Length: 463
Image (cartoon, helix red, strand yellow):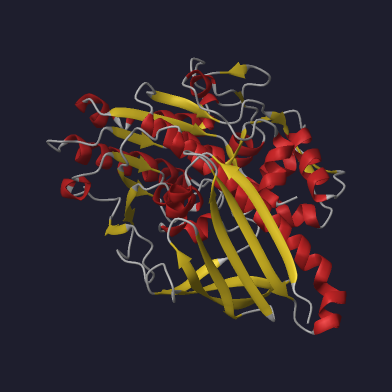
């Protein structure tokens, strides 16, 4: 029966040995999973090498999912390894990963896949083209991620790898950041609320943490950096008085306790990165906003100011304290973009309010890259605008997303309807105009992967 072959090659700025090492580190499989596919690691048997078996849960067709069991073989350290399907959706699937030296500090990644769709000629007729397209999209994405991540790590190749404590590591940002760091050779300590272990060894250390009580400083001993991402979801539920109080307390209390624990150590972490929000500036119309701009007067702006102030014990101790004021994070795996996708797929994408309000968007990989940059750049202090250099209006955002998805965008939801439906969150989060630009990031030498909206959306959605 006919075997189909797909080969994808990319030149990367690291040696073949380092490229091979990246693939062997914890989190590599998950880091390479496209965000538009809900791929989940189910189990892993054995160390990375010949005979290791991995089971992932992957989409099959529509709402249907299937388990895929793969086995590693042909393991040649520094040069190549193979994996083959033992059980899964293909009648045959074999993947060869080759790392080809191309000079002392460069290599070529060659991913070659040989496969057969099930059901013979009928399978090829019905699904052959769509399977091919799906594989092409997936491997193009994988190679973009490899190139971006290795460039970012390579920029600090002379710096030692760090031990990083992360809160919110199971959330959208935290998960991606953890995998970015572990594949780059850093060590991660997850401060998790509730269970302190994972059924699958992911190469990180899990530590139970109750954000409502003081943290034992011993947990942070040996940590070079803290990245604090945890906080109550601001767009979940109406903004009752109790909800607003939870939003505030879930940010200020844990931040202060972390800062106090770090400050109490004889050898504290070198940097404390505590997430913040671009809503610090409130609704400012067409005004261009930098880190030197005044803050706003909305509820969320006040939350941000108190949130950043809660890190004062770390600052007072001399710990470099950084606040990424994070904009609208783009990822089809969660957050604002994921919430819109179903409506846009159905041709029901809409302009919100006047549509003139500025949206300070940023691709998730640039958020992660900026946090890593902040960890490694000693000159970066205080708040920085964590958003792309080119914000767009809400109307432009919707039209661009519709174009990427090949769907019309003609609907309109007036502001009063959003206020009636959602309450206060509509004015503070959906209708507020924040034309923020990342001046401090650019001045510190950070390089964005995506400065324009459409290429960012096409990357994240494989289109």
